[in-house]
Every structure is written in C-alpha cells, then in structure tokens.
Amino acid sequence: MEDNGLIHAFILDGLGGGRPLSWDEVERWTAADGRLWVHLAYDEPKAAAWIEQKCDLDPVVSQSLLSEETRPRSLAVGKGLLMTLRGINHNPGEDHEDMVSVRIWAEEMRIISTRKRRLLTVAEIADNLTAGRGPATSGEFIEVLTELLTTNIESAIDGIEEQAALLEEQVVQFKDKGVLRTQISAIRRKAILLRRYLAPQREALTRLQSETIFWIGDRDRKHLHETTNSLIRIIEDLDSIHERALVAQEELISLLSEQLNSRMYTLSLVTTIFLPLSFLTGLLGINVGGIPGADYPWAFSIVVIVVLVIVLGQLLYFRKQHWI
Image 1 (spheres, rainbow, N blue to C red):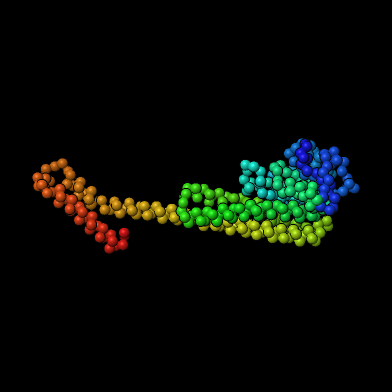
Image 2 (image 1 turned 135 degrees about the vertical axis):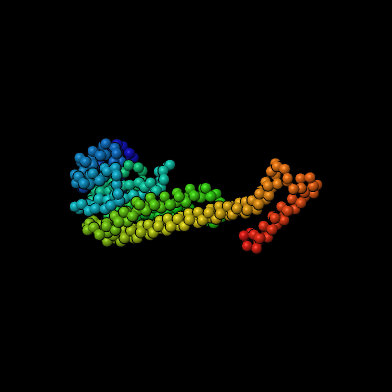
C-alpha cells in the first residue's frame, strides 16, 4: 500500500497482529484507538506535511524524520525515542553496501518511520504483523527492527566472507590475474563502506541500551544487548575480511612480481649468451678487406664451432654459478 507517501500503517493488537489503516484512518487516529505504526515515504508532500503539521512533534524530531542526509544514531527526546538506522540494500540493480536508512520516532502508543528507498526489513515486519507474528509493543518493535536489520546485514557479510575465501583460493592458483585484482579491490571497497555505516550504528545501539525509556522493558533491553553484540561481531568480521583481502592483494602482487622477475631473468640470460656472439658475428661481418678466412673453404664451419664452444662455455659457467 502506497498512497501519497503512505507505505504501511497498522494498529497493533498487542498480540503480534495488526489491522491495516488507510490515510484517512491514520489522520483520525488517537491513542484510544490503540498503538499505531505508520511507515511513510518522506519525499512525498502529503507525508511530509502530515509529519510537520499534524503529529505534534518536536521540530528536531520532524526534521530528522524528513532529513535527506542521515547518520545512525539514537536519542531520547522527552518520553520518545528518535533513531536513525541503516539496513542492507536489496533493491534490484543496487549494491548491498549502498545501505538504506530508516528514520524512527517511537513513543509508547505511536511509532512513525520514514524512508526514501525500499527496505526489506520494514516489509518483513509488515508481513509478520499481517500474519500475527509481529511486535506487540513499541519496545518490541524497536527490538524486532534492530534484530532483523542486523540479521540481514549478517547474511550479506557471510556472502562477502565466502567471496573472500574463494578469492584466496584463486590467488593461490594464480589464474585470471586481471580479474582477481578487480575482485579483490571490490571486496575491500565493500568492507570499508559497510564498516563506515555499521560503526556508528553500533554506537547508536549501545547508547540505546543506556537510555531511560520506561516503555522499553527488561526483555527488550536484553534482546537489544544481544543484537548489539552481534553487530560488534559483524564489524570484527568486516575488519577480518578487509585484512584478508589486503593479504590476498599483497600475495597477488608478490606472485606477479615473481613472475615478472622470472621473465626478466630469462631475458637477461638470453641477452648475456648472445651478446658476445653478436659481437663476434658483427666483427666478422664488417665489409672491409682483410677479414681472415674469407677465401678459406672451412672458415664458416670453424666460426660455427667457435660460437658453439663459446655458448657451451657460458652455459657451463652459469651452471657452476647456479644461475641456471
């Protein structure tokens, strides 16, 4: 459902289910009707006008819900909680590391979330509410949202880890060197971008646990603590992926350098062997009188034998010096 910015709207029944609402019902909602969750596309004029004019929100909150640029954070404002979080981008044709942000304002009886691009996690919560398996309270909504975001991030990181392991094997096999360089750079870029977003998100979840918000219960805080620990482990995994990619890149550079040195060494040996031969043949080939053996029938054979002796002598010398 998306009508002038309305993507999802539910009245939570307190048992895991929810009743969908239309725009008119959202605008007529009062706390007596039950706990409301409304999810909006903030770039739609009607959604923006409703947030600014009809929600009775602190200007800081309304500006944050409509802000284009965001950074993961959590902040208690009065009796409510303002959060900005990021999730993995599953939109077609876009990269996972180009994470999608969701802005949340949560009170005991009302939850408002906004986004610009589609976020799979929010759609999962809406589907769970329709199936009767969703959050029952505002505190549980925050807990479920952060847990699903982290779970989806973890799945994406697992995929990147598999790519990193495959690249390490390919580096050892030393195949498709040009492709390997590109893939290693892509892995490092993903790890860097994801960590850039997830480090402040870890700080936001850590701060959330210390906020004194009465409608977030002990059970919710325990789950938030576990989610934070999972996010910390994910960031550590990203650091590990980055280091592994760096080691793989250094190994690839080392192998390429070794290959180049081997080729240069071979060329140097060939040059060393043929340099005196070129001097000898060049000396005998000058077009002046007095070249010895010019009229002798066996002169060419003797020159060939001398050349072969020189080559053999060089090879024996190189062998003795362990150069070949």
